[in-house]
Amino acid sequence: MRIVLVGPPGAGKGTQAAYLAKNLSIPHISTGDLFRANISQGTPLGKKAQEYMKAGQLVPDEVTIGMAKARLEEPDAADGFLLDGFPRNLNQAKVLDEILDEKSIRLDAVLDLEVPEDEVVKRIAGRRICRSDSSHVFHVTYSAPKAEGVCDHCGGELYQREDDTEETVRKRLEVYHRETEPIIDYYKAQGLVVTISALGKVTEVTQRAMEALRQNAA
Image (tube, rainbow, N blue to C red; front, side, top):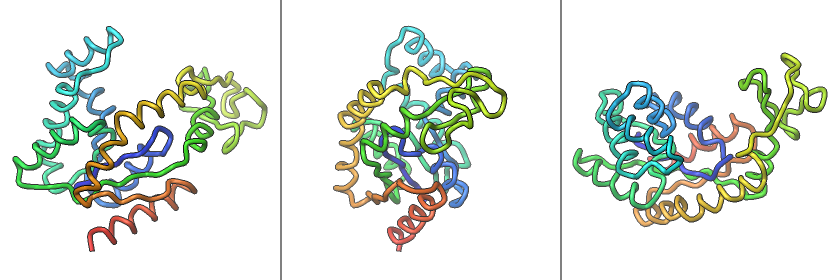
């Protein structure tokens, strides 16, 4: 299957993408991984992306598109893939269609993870990270530490990242509504969008997604 995964920040896209890709035996292609791989390997696109990032500027579409196109050329993506974080806007969606048209293939589904805005804020703004080990992550509501502000694992101080504050989350949501949401209507016009609720346990959301994809493919 060839799937694009969309949803607001905090919808659990990364988690669901990993589970779905494993269940469907297709590669999980995330924008974040593409950037890290190209930068660490020192590719021309990676160097270009790093220049913009160091200057605190947004990486232009053509750089992101170039990375995605190169990744889709790799053998493991020949029979299917799950795109996470790409396309991020209408221009990227249209170029992706052109890339797939050149290969005489098309997307099978665009899986839209739906989460109420207040829940997104609650999920992200409630996160607390351990200063001693960033892999130790807690949540004030869903997985609170035994002692407030103290990591259960190593006793390190728990803190809220700057980009996890409510104000920042709401700004990220504004960007999502403005930049990314339009691609949902674009794909709806092609009959590709499958919308599911991303509320509940991770396993429940995965089962819901798998069932929706099966019904869409039937």
